[in-house]
Amino acid sequence: MTTEKFLFRFGLISLVSWIIHFTISFSEYNTSKIVTAGVFLIVALTIYYLFVFIYFRFRSGEIILSAGLIIIVLILLFVMFTGKQ
Image (tube, rainbow, N blue to C red; front, side, top):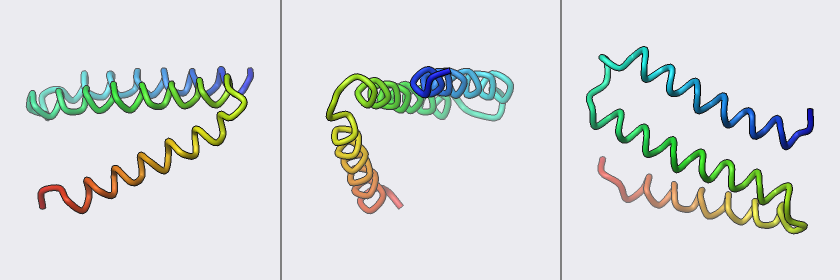
């Protein structure tokens, strides 16, 4: 199995495991928490698959991936320090 296939399958397994978790624990969460988690999963997996695709398909994939990760870290730091306490 190639690394690329492994990473794509890892993303799929992550998605399936989250779906199973929320199906089993549905009664523990209110609707807004489940919707928030669903939006997060869609965004996170989209970024994950996009980065894996770019890394393996383009010559400058490592540079693009590094820049993307730095941007994500900066956004997360901004949200962490300016969000509600």
